[in-house]
Length: 494
Ligand code: GLU
Ligand code: ZN
Image (cartoon, rainbow, N blue to C red; front, side, top):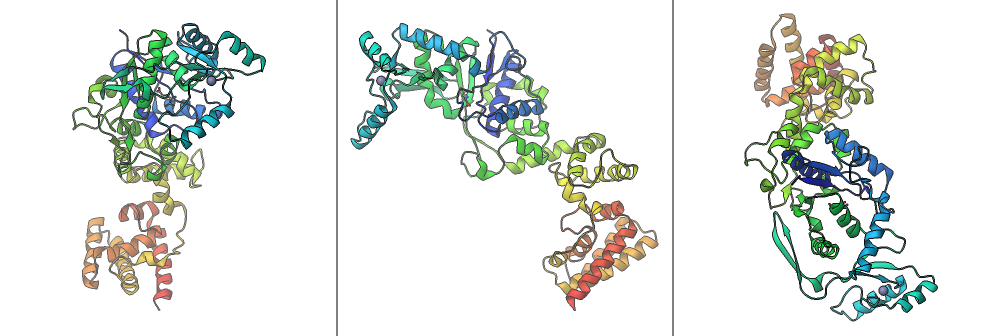
């Protein structure tokens, strides 16, 4: 049997980490089994639908390099793959269920249903939900309602007795008493729109889906879906509900933890291969050891059995580390191309680069490569090359444990060491050793001397390595900045 799986997002928001992980697991599972990966757009909720979300879905998958075998744009034998284009089908099948006695028309008005709900709540009655008022309407009663201009919904007859079991590859059998399944859910609304349950079940069947991998939050819908499959006389697919993605605090991953939309990660400069690799390790592992995989490798080795039962932890720091590793694997040339948009946006360079800018980039990229966690870090790390520091915050000059006095003396003397060192042609190690000795002499930590120097040269307490910075900036500018900083510090200390 050919494996056929699908990712079935609702375009009602930006693609987020959890959704993309579902997409990746489905995609890798299809590839590893020589099957098909299908994209289906579940846009039945017209109120929450947005074009922007749909575009974001396409952009995200194409940025990650996930191609779908069947779906919107590419088409396929079970199309259309957009639910709003399949409404006739849902209507036909819902009416079929009515004809088979598995569903029925209900003419209850919203007012009646509201009143019912209020009554049930007031009475704290055990019976919650629809009261099956219309389950046995006669043809005359129906005609009467129709003549009043009422439009019916179609409701599924949930069996009142018995139990329903569905099997989940990870969780095993999940059984629920039918009378605990919320009674008689609407399948087709009065405006002809299907509900999620109806459209989802019909499409999974019609599209020949063999395995359903989706978020665990859908488990409560499982029994209802199985009842629907039974009503149609169809075989349900295999279920594999994926454990939740949570933050380090054990709560479901959300905006409280940081960015969750893939678009944000992309804007900050995470590489698609890093994000894909890391997200695939959230709740899945190969052998508990190896963590680095290319997309092609995951397409080979992915298996359902290695999905963890426990929720997966999304660790932002770990992702940063992964991203840094992937950045360092880039050639200087490729990395330059990736960094330029950020530098252009910061106003540091113009495109196409001038010759001077090209030379500067060629020097900068290998140095900055070792320091980047995300591509956008390049802006703060290279700002000193393109803008004069303003030294607004003089406290930056004073390292922890030092004083403004020490900072001033340290900078004054370090400047002398630098000038003499360079004029004598000493190498970095020698000059660095002399600066470290200065710290001993002044009775401060090494940073007590290096910090004022770093801040004078780059305007920031976080920078590229000191001698790389000096080299990139050039001696002349370096010395001029130190003098400016010295003058400022002197006026402050006095
Ligand atoms: N449209 C649903 C969602 O957005 C699909 C759930 C499913 O995979 O069955 O999560
Ligand atoms: Zn009714």
